[in-house]
Amino acid sequence: MRLPLAAALAGAAFLAFRSAARRARFLDLRGAVVFVTGGSRGLGLLLAREFGRRGARVAICARDAAALGAARDDLAARGIDVVALACDVGDRAQVEAAVGEVERRLGAVEVLVNSAGVIEVGPLDTMTLDDHERAMRTHFWGPLHATLAVLPAMRRRRHGRIVNVASIGGLVSVPHLLPYSASKFALVGLSEGLRAELLKDGVLVTTICPGLMRTGSPRNAGFKGRHRAEHAWFAVAASLPGLSMDAERAARAIVDACCAGESERVLSVPARAAATVHGLAPGVTADALALVNLVLPRPDGAGTRSVRGADSESVAAPSWLTALGDRAARRFNQLRVPSRAS
Image (tube, rainbow, N blue to C red; front, side, top):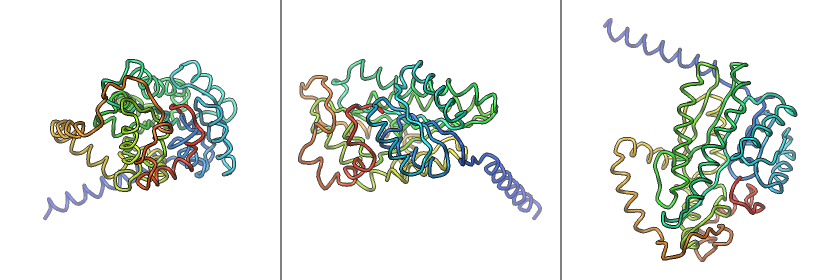
């Protein structure tokens, strides 16, 4: 009887310790300064809304001034104290200047959310070195620039949160999304390494790996090869319930993970299943994705030209199959933005 009793006491002590640790790590967002990159549309805008709803003072940045203005007006209309700054996260000097401006106008950045993203869809043969470099500038160098800009002050205060929005594509590489997946893999590696190195300094880093979400992003993604066919499969997949996740629910989950100081959260049932299977049997998932690749559109000599989703419409998209994604595009500022990068 002594051994089961000892085991039960040890289990109870562990649960009590974990609960106390979670309470100690919990971040109250009221009055906190949160800087969201790529905050002008889609998930970035939703994250800015959710942080603001919980009482944070919010700064957003993106490349397009008109989209930023619309996002600023959206947030201000919700009673959120917001600063909107034009900034290309791939440019270190611009990022450092933006962080300095946020600190001047709102105060020290307590939470950094690296959410800026670009996406190019198409077969390997249609992708150029520029596509890979642009994805790396946005998904790896951008988060690194922003992290290095806010980190000295966070270390001095021994307090701070960094949230890196990666992707299931950063855990499982998906056909026809090679620059995106490769750069998101780089971000996951950076984020996990930062978590390990910065915990001693009181800075908690959270890696977020969402699956497909209904953000309306296909309108502003780039499509190559048979661009209408590429847009159709991507837009449908990013709209259907079961395959895709409600973006507002995703934003709430991301903010919850940030406040709890979690190390990683994979969003959506399909994404968690894919990550689990790939972790257990990477060869099986690689072979399965090779079969998926066989049914995706062939390049058919279409060259390397990129066409925006808004200019790649077809019978399949928009249609009833993409209705939820089209509705998200209207609600999350995707209709206003001419460029493909937040």
